Image (cartoon, rainbow, N blue to C red; front, side, top):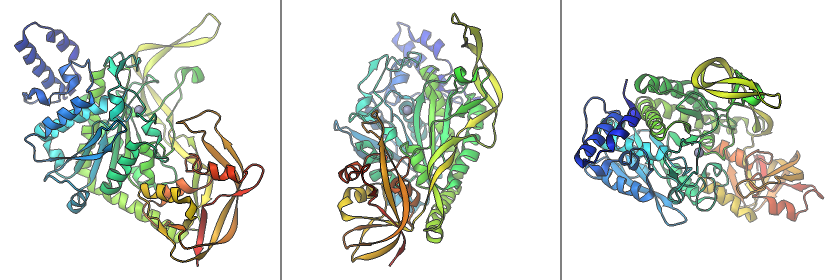
Amino acid sequence: MKSGFGADTERSQIAIFTSNRTAMMRNLLICIFLLSGLHLSAQEWDKKLLTTPELSVYQKTSSYADVMAFIKAVKEGSSNITQISMGTSLEGKDIPVLVLAEPRISTPEEAKASGKPVIYVQGNIHSGEVEGKEAVQVLMRQILHGDKKHLLKNQIILFVPIYNTDSNDKMEAGRRPSQEDSPKEVGIRANSQGWDLNRDGIKMEALETKGLIKNIIVPWDPTLFVDLHTTNGTWHGYSLTWAPSYHSAGEKAPYDFTWNKILPTVTDKVRDDYGVHLGPYGYYFTRQEGWPIKTISTYNHHPRYLVNQFGLRNRMAILSESFAHERFYQRINATYAFVSEILEFTNTNGKEMMAINARAEADAINFVKEQGGKASKGVRFKKVPQDKPIAKYRTYNYTSYTNDKGQVSYLRKPEIVELENIIDYSAFEATTSAIVPKGYIIPAEFENIAQHLMDHGVAVTRLEKSVRVKGEVYNATKMTKGRRKFEKHNMATIEGAFAAGSRKYKAGDYMVDLAQPLANLVFYMLEAESDDGLVTWNFFDAYFEGKGLGENTVEYPIFKYFELR
Ligand SMILES: [Zn+2]
């Protein structure tokens, strides 16, 4: 077994507090050797190539300046790295993207010409969840200067260690108390505009999301997107839990490959090589189920979460959640092991993944060509169990007692147990469907909608002359808005009914031919009854309210055409 780079920190913490600086440095290097998975030969790193947690014996996480200094150091003496920019944060910080490739490349055109898959890995989307930021830095060092150079054989890796740059530096103690108080200080979850960057996948209000989608995802077209987080809550028995891009209205094949192949294979490898246990993301409540629990349940399918949005792009994606209740070094170690083994997998199987994604894209386009105007897809979903239960589910044990009010309460015990046949609520089934059209017409006055789609990478054209279209209109009779704000929005749902209709549109109106790679994403965003579309995020509130929806029936202004004349 590899020692993983967190294995022996308690002992090294004692050793480190010596008054002799040389001994201290030597101990530190031994510690780092033990901790970096370099179990075969010690590598003496230049201090510049050590991360802030390593240098502080896992008491501190990197500042933005620390990360930038590390990037500068890791670039020195390597011909396999190019630094590009995702964009600039509100406070003016550049968001660095490191392109690692052999031979070195610096443009998406070169990446495409190489025929290799592009794998995208980002840390620090939530600046309190810093493990990805640290693991990515260590991994860059190991790939460029250490024992993982082989990972560049068959793939191009895009690393974004610090996605949420501004909020990272607003560090304070006590922000995430469940994290065993390590590191002491971490940054803020939201970005500096106040947006949760992992709820912004559809509305795309944050500068970071715009930069990510427009400057990186659309041009570089990653085969796999990996988003690194840290979760608190349920005391499962895993050092890290994962989720694929949940399957909703997208193509099933990329989801199936992630769920059935990538995640189980990587999980086995990480257990065998690092002695670290990984498992499916989910939570349970002893209060509801008693003990032992029978079910776990995941979050949900909405594409506002970046990982889920990726499924609608016919690409694969993985959510990584290190376990907040372990110590900082263990969380970095688990994240490092997970990402390393994902990259081992993609280095071997990347071509197959590209082929699966390409077929999914062709299927999405063919569905519109062959079934457009006839067949339906889901627009609202509910969570349902997977067909197969989890054979063995690791979790901390619980015991029960009767409290002073005479109620049964549950207390966590210190040992981990394995429960059998746990039902896993992590599949999604449509509760409402809508006909997939051949395309949509967006009247010229809704330029913001057309622009929003284009920002997502959707092909939108303008009508050069007037057209008559046949298809469906949606007659809205009611709009319900969330009473409490979520992400500064009172989210909207409309009710009504579809009716067959034909309309004439004029030159200058926008047309979205749905027979294009992002068909499933466009469908999810534009459908009137979608549970996470542009209606949901208030893009049409002013229009509906202006027309007196509620008092009057109001036609949804986006027309679904089945036939174009
Ligand atoms: Zn998170």
